[in-house]
Image (cartoon, rainbow, N blue to C red; front, side, top):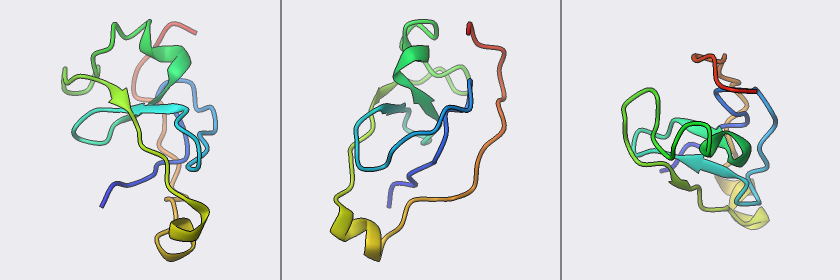
Length: 79
């Protein structure tokens, strides 16, 4: 199951799990849309393609909640 991480790994902005305001790679590294252009649509962790993270409905979030574990920024992204 996809881990719905709560923040961008670059700028630490909050990401809503009910909206598609995040992008992910196949390893579920998570970034906000504002960083994608700066990252040239490639994950700086693995080099994989960054694509829109699917949203999760409120009903399913109750059964399968988003992660609360915030990830520290790993990269010095353009801010």
